[in-house]
Image 1 (tube, rainbow, N blue to C red):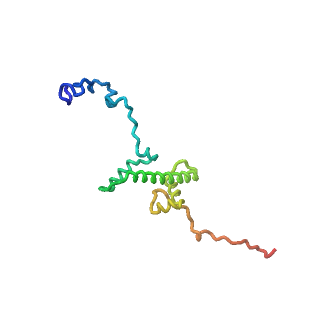
Image 2 (cartoon, helix red, strand yellow):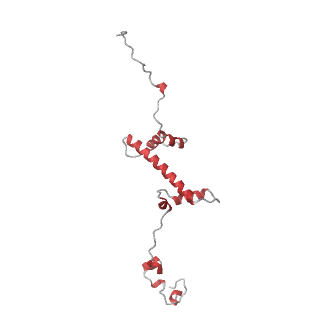
Image 3 (cartoon, rainbow, N blue to C red):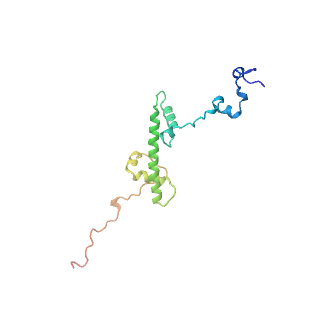
Length: 158
């Protein structure tokens, strides 16, 4: 069967060079004449920035949500770094809350306790409801039983 070239030799074959079909399969897959050059593995934007969060995906979402507007490349890196930091902070505090409750897994209750006991995170996530998080244990001071201030002696002065 004939290929797309339509018969005859290819240009490379006409000039005396090897045609791509006569090259070994490995060389053809690597790019023919440039097969000796070892291609470097591509580095992701996240790897270059030293982050775990996906910089490329965040950049794509930023572009999708702002049609017709340009988004700087550094904006996605900055946002990914902020999100990664906040996630690490919440997970660390939630892990401590889980350890305090003698548990090895973080559940929504631990995340709730971590956020509400931290002043800055509570301010940031003040309007957020965490499903199955419960509430902080809190009893109003006026509802507590009244205690006597000093124990008065029953029999008078000693």
